Length: 517
Image (cartoon, rainbow, N blue to C red):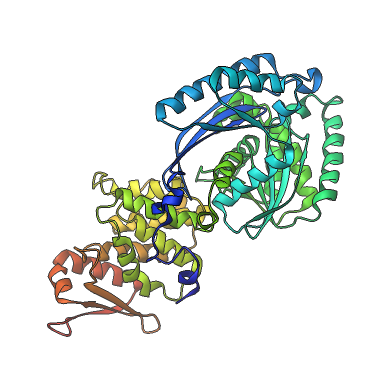
């Protein structure tokens, strides 16, 4: 058995953990994040290891605006935040949730009237807000990153309106962590203009570095201001896939985008990038922090995480056996069970196409596994658009543990599950995220799934086997009597298309005729 199959939770015959009663209580969880800049409710639903966002609403309140000067929550922001909490409680009741888990961060914990606000919310809505300290905020944000990147290593940087937290992760565990006052709302109030801010930023980052030590692995960026900065980076680069989660930048990208921000009109740029006015006003301050951060810590690369404190609150409730699961495979299993016509067929299809990927890397085999589980979940779409729907789902759906190139690989494979060619689609600009070899591999996978889907009427049977000899470039299809009955003219054409893509010779063998060219 190869390394991929030996990895815990990835073996295709293993029972998906979302069926385990011990995790069923996580099938719908509501969490509220009362931040310095926004208040957000997220209701998670589905496969608990990689949940769908059943409900996701953010209200920009600016609780921390002016906090440095007054020591109190922004009066208008406080009213907006309270109304948001009242609305969220009504939504939770309508959805039948047992309750909401709510946490408040820097603004509420630092404000003189923070506790008063917490008590008002509890008295009038019944929601208990847990005011957490900076280190706890850092820990929860790091756990949110681990939800999407199990076993990851690097430095988590979570920027809010009034604070910025750092935490290190290694082998799935959270290590050292620290908080600071480097939030854009606070930096905006620093005296001395940009020069004054630069002094504060550099001095603070020096202190953070002294505490955290060298952190030259990956830098994970968590928080709305970082996501807005990344969206501007996409605009500057002309990047084709506008999915922020797992978006990668280099240190040079950060420097170039900071310059790009400085010389462009923010109003025009925010309209082009689809960023709110309130958020865009904070991005230049966040950019100054990020430039100083990467200059001091020198990360190997930079990844944007849409997962943060809210996902960390869900991760907190997971048993360890669920945390250890691969979020992509668990989510694909759940999707197959919920939406496929023949739930369980994905594992048979994976074994059918497996010989074509025997020498592939573990990362590729993982994508093969995911594609086979997803191959039929979009069957309800109109046949003329099914291939495009599959591509859209793969590239834009909430699937954890996927790089952008891997999303496109899945998209191309699932597109070829339903059509022979990929030219003429609206996705052609995304193909550049893959190498020629990766595109060819995805096409082979898609066409093999397209063939295999025609040869099964019962997910418990195995009417066909592929044998691939890569050195001789020869493909054999072996059919049982049941498989021969299913091997129609259309199936033969699909087999030929697969053979042509492999640039191979071929033969079809069955129990009756032994050999049929």
